[in-house]
Length: 281
Length: 329
Ligand SMILES: Nc1ncnc2c1ncn2[C@@H]1O[C@H](COP(=O)(O)OP(=O)(O)O)[C@@H](O)[C@H]1O
Ligand SMILES: [Mg+2]
Image (cartoon, rainbow over all chains, first blue to last red; front, side, top):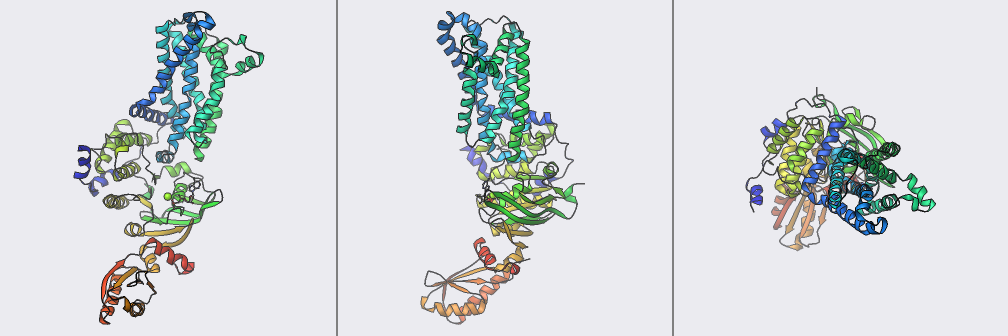
């Protein structure tokens, strides 16, 4: 009731003095730097999380479910003991869950881009990719949150990483960094495809083979040759190997370099494609 | 010196074309908008208004022709143009999930203000637009009028040289519409050039110094509101007679007095005549009242009459029925 009366009881009359004061042309500040504009869009992503906290459900409930499910489903059968299997599988599940969550970036971009507010953003004299970088900065927070949730569940279940806190933090940092790079694929699809549904569809099509046909659950030696070949070029498999090695306290520099290089390539290629589509929209 | 303090043309477009597939939404449009004025772009739904505005605001790349904003080319220097213009789109260009205050602070930051300055500016704007109480609420809880005000507040955050308002009052109640009109008048008085699109002749008439009438992506007339109305006739007088049998007599009289064709309505006692006038409302009113006096003198009793402004439909009918050279220059 009170919200309604507040609006109707005092009728707004545009006052020339008050409006004149805000219209008086002060010096326009210089345009913001690329970093500052990106951080501002990152702030927008945070505000969106604050106003629609339900969206965090995806990044908490889903990873918990994955961890419990795979540890108990495969633990006994594959390794004979769930605690032993957990040491192997937890970094993999963490990678898998976070990489899966990246697809929400595409969905968010797709549902947001049709809104009028994007027309405003695109008429601002700012570094053009900052809008998209802002999304991904917000998403990095979600990835970090998901990783932390999984780590916590893992620690409760008996995960004892030999790499200690430093190894775990390094592993999560690599994972979040790679996911940032990987998300540019989804910003591209988010801009390219017509509906949220089709973005979801394409995401599943890409993500299922990348995450399941990998070394997340079992070591690739047991796989037939063609699968081994696929796992060999699957960036997610390399990411799993790199994160696993960091958390185990035995960093595998070859795998880490592979991950960093492919991440850089993903940004260059899909970042460029995203911006092409963004400028055309 | 601000661009708006220079004189001359704020917007200069020639031969603008944009096609979506085979549909030429904008088809060779020329516009010349003098600096420091309100310019109305009038046209029905689908005429190409939004498409034209989007090209001028660097959101869409023209397929042909060229356009300059204060001499800056929208295709070759989009970033320079973006520094001069701002746009209030047809559909709210604010973020519904965020609060009014957050929307303005976000934009202030993106326009280069430091955090404290962006916050001050947001508070000032909310105050000036009567939104202080609503500032902490999410925009999706706002009424249509409040949303529109926030949208305009966001657009003038940096006092742009050119402000595009795409159908700013469509869907608003009369009170909110009046508020928007007042705001536009104040904004233009402070030196910003306003290009406003509308479907209402009445709105363009009240606000704009000059009006471009467009249809199917083409300019069909351009001039001051007075010139346009003069080309159409100032309006129509609708007369209802007490005795339907006198209608043909009344028709003759009105046609003679107004020197214009008279239409017989479906209602057997009603007729409608165009009042030629010269575009000025008071002239039309005088002519209409003289015609009514003639009817009374001839013993034809009138039960009801009204004088209406020409509607956009009548403008179109008149403009598209006539050869181009007779329309207002
Ligand atoms: N993105 C688009 N894709 C295809 N057709 C479009 C698009 N935008 C506008 N049109 C078409 O272009 C014409 C002009 O549209 P628009 O500029 O929105 O007109 P107005 O704003 O005057 O109502 C219409 O026929 C509309 O259907
Ligand atoms: Mg439109």
